Length: 552
Ligand SMILES: Nc1nc2c(ncn2[C@@H]2O[C@H](COP(=O)(O)OP(=O)(O)OP(=O)(O)O)[C@@H](O)[C@H]2O)c(=O)[nH]1
Image (cartoon, rainbow, N blue to C red):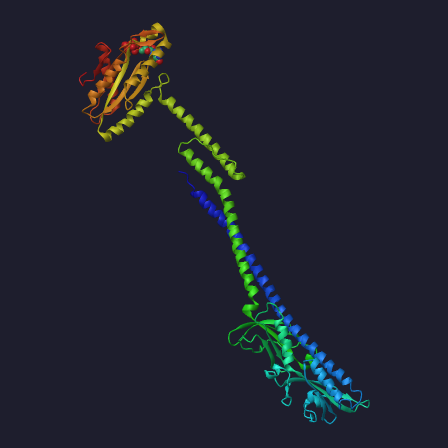
C-alpha cells in the first residue's frame, strides 16, 4: 500500500513555511493600512464636521452683518433731525419689519433718549436712556449681545412664544449732526428666534448628518443656543482643558466623553477675527455628533478591512496549499512507485513533474533501482551457477549439501527422518563409448527429466557428477521405508522402456542404494551408507534397490 505520510507532512510543512510568514506579513500590512486608513477617515469626518461649524459661524457673521447694514441704511435716511419724528418714519420701520423677519422692533430715540417713533407704534413716547442700545450707540454703531427685553410685547409669530420669546440682539446706530452733536439713536431689536432658525437650517441642511448638534457659545463660554433634534437626549459640557476656545488652537476636533457616558465627536469654529461681527461679540460655534454615528464609516472601514484581511489570508493559504501539493504530489508518486517496486511490481519511477530537483531525484532513484536489479540478476545467476548442475539443470553437490543442512535443522524440530538414495546408471559408459560423449550428455539430460517426474516436489534430486544422482527425502518414522520404496519403484520404472537418444532406444538401467536415518541422524552420515548399499545393488545384479544394513 502506498505510503503518503511523508508527502502529507511535507505539504503541511510547506504550507506552514509558505503561508505563515506570508500571512503574517499580509496581516501586518493590512493592519498598518487599516490604522492609516482609519486615521484618514477620522480626519476626514472631523474635518467635515468642522466645515459645518465654520459655515455656521460664517453664515451668522454674514447675516448679522447684513442686518447691521440694514440699520446703517435706515439711519442714513435721516436727512433732517425731524424725519424720524414722523408718520413716514413709522411706515418705514413697519415696512422694514415686514420685509426682514429678523427684526422684531425698530425705533428712533432723540438725543435725550425719548422714543419719537417705533414700528407698530410700540413703546413710542417712552424713555430708553437705561438701554445699552441707546447709551453705547451715542457715538456710532453698537451691537448689543443677547439680552432680554420684557418691555417689548411682540407679535412675531409662534417663535415669540417659545424659549426665545423676549430675547434679542440689539443693533443701534447713533445719528450725529454735521457739528458732531448727537441728534438721536436708531435702535433695532433682532429676534433671537431668527438666529435659531438660521442655525436650525444650517444643521438640518446637511444630508446624512444624523444626530448633529450645534451650540452657540458666548464670549464667557456660556451656551446661548442649542440646535438639535428635539428627540435627542444627552448633556453638554464644554471640555475644560481642551483649549477649545483658545485662540490659535491647532486642534479643530476631538473625541469627547460626556458625564453620562455618551461619546461624541466634537468640533468648533476657528477663532473669528475681531474685525468680524461675531468676533467682536466673541461668539463661537461648537458642532458635535454622537461618536457611534460620526464614526460609523470608520467601523464599516474596519469591517471591510477585516473581511479583506480574512480573504487575503484564505487566498494565501489556498495558494500555499496548491503550491505545496504541486511540490509534494510528484514526491508522493515517486514514493508510491518505489513502494510498489519494493513489493515486486515492475514500474518506472515517474518523471515530468516540471520541478528540476524532483525530476533529478526520480532519475537518480531509477538509476539506483536499475543498478540494484542488475546486481540482483547477476547475483541470482551466480547463485544458479554455483548451485546447479550445468548439464541437467538439477541441483549439484553444493546445493545438496546446503539442503541437507537446512533439512537437518527442520527434522530436529518436526521429528521426521531422512532417507538418502544414491543412484548410478547401469551401462552408461558403453553409450559414451559407442555413441559418443554428446549422446551420453543427451542421455543424462533425459534421465534427469524422468527422475524429476518420478520424485515429489518436496524431495530433492541432485546430480553429483558423471552418471551419479542423489535423492534426499523425509518422512515420519513409521512411513519412511514404505514411502522410500514407492519412490524407488517409480525411479526404476523410468528405465523400463529404454531411453531414446539419437534415434536409438538405449537400454540403460539404474541401481539404487538407500540409507534411512534414525532419530537425530544427519543426512551427511547417510550418503556414504547409501553408496555402500548402491555397491551392494550393483553387486547383486544392478537395476534394483538395496537398503543399507548395519552389518553390510
Ligand atoms: N557423456 C558424459 N559422460 C560422462 C560425464 N561424466 C562422466 N562421464 C563418463 O561416465 C562414465 C561413468 O562410468 P561408469 O559409471 O563406470 O560406467 P557404467 O557403464 O555405468 O558402469 P557401472 O556403473 O559399473 O554400470 C565414464 O566413462 C565417464 O567418463 C559427462 O558429463 N558426460
